[in-house]
Length: 169
Image 1 (cartoon, rainbow, N blue to C red):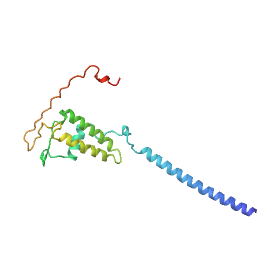
Image 2: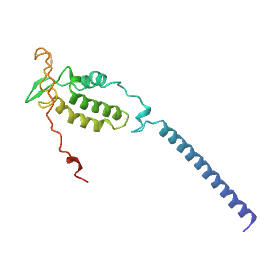
Image 3: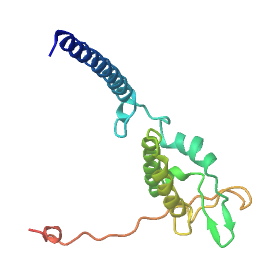
């Protein structure tokens, strides 16, 4: 091997090394950019850093849910939809609406979070507004006349026998 050939191989190797170094630097910059973007992104479950958009379930129901998903109250085809203007007096409704609100607050932070939330809403609305729902004995004002609110009485329950809940022991 001649000195000229040896020099050419070293030059070619140095050029390749420089090219690889430039590629590594470019990739390192891309990784740093992606890590920065990842750190700035809101992740599902990281909602602790993000305050809720609505401060109470009442604000969410009156400002978002009712205007966004209006339902005609009264007879609609074969179905009767029930609503109570004093919805906050119905524990079941408050529980279901609060769960929907919490779910909505979390879902809005996720890229596709609304898809499962909408399925949950589609499940809950017929229960809330249906013939067996918490508003079944209430009438809204409007075509049906004066608003009428009736809270449902509690269901009776007997206390379980003394060792009933220890069956697994």
